[in-house]
Image 1: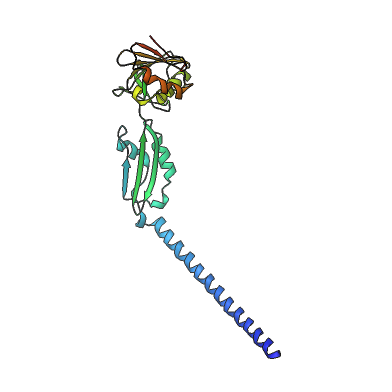
Image 2: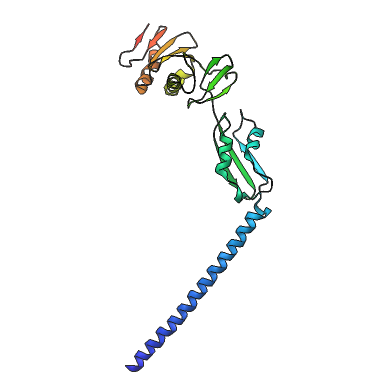
Length: 240
């Protein structure tokens, strides 16, 4: 029995030695891996190995590519890893006609900038010209309105005006088949909004409430003879 116990003790001591050796090897290899990664990171960060060579801009139409490039502020030869993509995207998104911007690193050497431009859904006239409003109610340009964009007629038009906001919201609510027929949006209040159609007919829409029901009844109603179609109370529609 004494011999068996001695053999077991010797086996445990040998296992402890091998375990210690294995752990030392693991720590050694781990340290070497950290050193290699540090060297690779330093090379990528401070040398031209991963420097920016190409900037690709996508989605820019109303906004010129040069206007976007002027805001990128990416020096030639800068490491891809040193680019703050969020900061670059915020600078590009500061352009009034840009709704959102996304900046991505495409390794090894390309920065891709994707621009989502604002699209006019309404405009209103002023002595300065036509003010364009997008689907978010943001006023982003004073320039000739694109063909087909309806004109807003209201007392105090502007991005901060609740009545203007209601008019923009209603254009997003109406069925597309009706939206393409609208030439003017007349907004007297947030609950009294009318749509003047290109063929001379008028849809009395009311406010933004009961949108789903109004959208369901308005197109069938427009198939009837008449000039004024009232869906402001969608459970009691009328035609004049």
